[in-house]
Length: 137
Image (cartoon, rainbow, N blue to C red):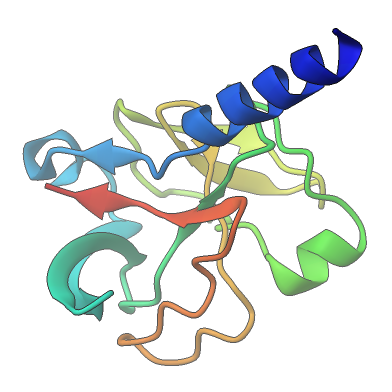
């Protein structure tokens, strides 16, 4: 019975760990830090969120609303999308104090990150289990 509960819990968590999807109208002109870009993803052209330089941003499935659990070595691989002073943010974007002590951008309460291996606007290397691109559909 205990094993069945563990399997069911793991299955439920796996189902809830889906990529955050937003409508383009939800995010356009809500912050000067984010824009939409089109990338080839799993054989399809998809719109995803990127910083103003076109670098992809990600969410972490283990985070919760307004709380980042990425610390230490995690931050070296997944740096937070920092919010410089004077940046504009409107809902659904927000700002929290990240685990590096600096302001971090959130979307619908979920902290946003970069993947250290994404160097070019076409890169989406950070879309891993537990790490998700933000799709606009």
